[in-house]
Length: 277
Image 1 (cartoon, rainbow, N blue to C red):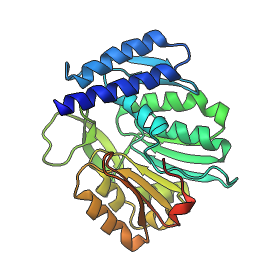
Image 2: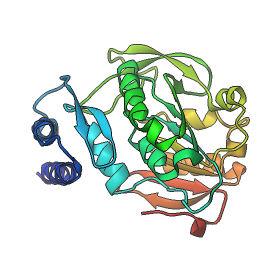
Image 3: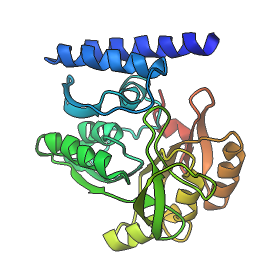
């Protein structure tokens, strides 16, 4: 019963936020709220319907029978990930691993505008197409340097099975996962920084549904040495210790931990210089 109350409470907050921040798409928002309620009540396993919702500062294509609307709430209202300060005129280099439909990327675009260089990774081909559409809608207005990549990050380049599940979370499957899926391409963050000529990452954001240790392992040769801040969602309690220990030799220390949201943030600079919600 307690979990059901918590789910409905989340539903109410998320939908109220959407209604308060949509400009001219109340009918679509109402349809999304009904679908989202059905998701919380576990009335269906999978269904597909894409709508374009017009929020206050941007338009976005959403799968209404999914948890995608939760991303809007978490990133724009709860501000659950570490935020870089806005004051400097210096170019910001950000990597968004597990970009989904682009809420975190869009938030960086709105915050930094032409001072932003960002690479967004999304392995699901359908979600990737919506990510590109969502980013392109405001690219001209913000003049941000954004590149979207249809790959997952891992320890080594190659291929892997990707499992889609709208009622839980889509993810790159490990060897024990026998759920049906599609084949996606893998690369490493070390390969990306070399190919892109990147010499600094101001913020690395990771949300990969349990694959976070493999993303970090694929960054240990080059990318972590040039990364200043990391903010990530972890999906197993033991990852708190494992990730902290893994990052320690690269001189990262934890500057924020939200166990209720399973979010950790690390930095090589003083935590006082950073903004957290």
